[in-house]
Length: 418
Image (cartoon, rainbow, N blue to C red; front, side, top):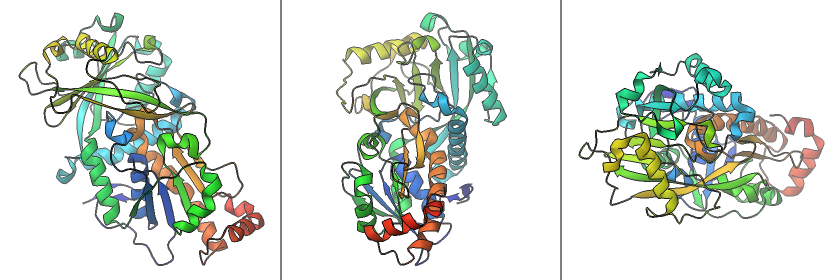
C-alpha cells in the first residue's frame, strides 16, 4: 500500500524499523487518539507500548465519526480559541482518510461522501462561517458547492429551526468506527506495538518514574480522554454525553440518503438544541443525531427517552421523509461520553514539573476522529525532541528516579526542548 501521508503508511511493517537503541514510548489510552499516535510513532522507528484499561466500549466507538471542518456546527465551541491550530490538525487527518478511501482494501474503514451544511444565518454576515468557508476553499477540500438549489435537491425543509438561509457542501470522510478501531489495533500490533491491559489511576505526575521504569519507556503520552481529568489534574476536562439513533436506509421507506447533513445554527447556543445531524453509513444505516448532555459517563438513554424523541423529531423536521423511518432492530441507539475540555484540545508537554517526560494529547471532544492524526503528528514531534535528549543523558536506560531527577536538574535547558 502507498503512503497515506508523509511519514505514515498502511503497510503492516513500519516505515522505519526500530533499532536495539530506539526509544520506547508508553502511550496510555486505546481510543483513536492513542492508536493513531502509536501508528505514527511506529512508522518513525519508535518502540511502542500501549496501555489501556479497556479495548471495547470506548468513546471512539460511539462517535458519529464524520470528518468535521472546524469549528463544529453544534455543541461547545472550545476550539475557537485556537482555530488555526485545530484546522491544521483536521487537515492532517483529512489527508490520511482521503488517501485511505482511495485504496480498495481500506474502503471498509473509510469512505468519502458529500457533507451538506445548512445554515440559519447568511454566511457572509457571520464571521465564523465565512472564515470557515474561506478555509475550506483555500485548503482545496474537494466537492465544494454552495447554493440554495441544494435544499430542493435533497428534499430539505427550509422552515426547519426557524428558517434555513443557505447551504453548502464538500466531500468528507466517513469512518466506519468498529472496522477502523479493529484495523488500528491490528496495524499497530503488526508494526510492533505491545498492547497491555491495565488501569492507571491518579495523577500521572505522581507515578511518572514508576511508569517509565515498569514499561522501560523514555517518554509517556497521555491519550486518556476523559481520564485526563484525573491523570493530568485538569479540572477543565468533563464528559459530554451523546447519542445517535440508527434507522434503516435501504430505500424501502424513504429515498436513500447518500450525503451527510448538518444544521449549523448560532441560535442553538452550545447545546445543539435546534440542530439536526444525518449520517449515512454502510450496511443501509442512517444515523440521526445529536444530543449533548453534561452527564458524566452515564449512558442510560433509550429510544423512548424524551431527549431522544426530541432529537428524532428535529431530524424528521429537517428531512420530512424520515417520518417513515424504521429503527435498526439490532442496534437502534448508540451512545457514549465525549471527552470535552474547556479551552479545547491540549497537545503539549507536562508543565507542572520541569523536565517531565509526559506529553499530553486529550480534550478532543466530539471531533476526535477529525483531529486524531493532526494531534498525533504534534505529539510525536514533541516526543522526538524529548527522546533525542533523554538518550544522550541516560543512554543505558536505567530508569531510576534518582538518576533521572539528577540529570534533569543538571541539564534542564536540554530536557525542556520541544
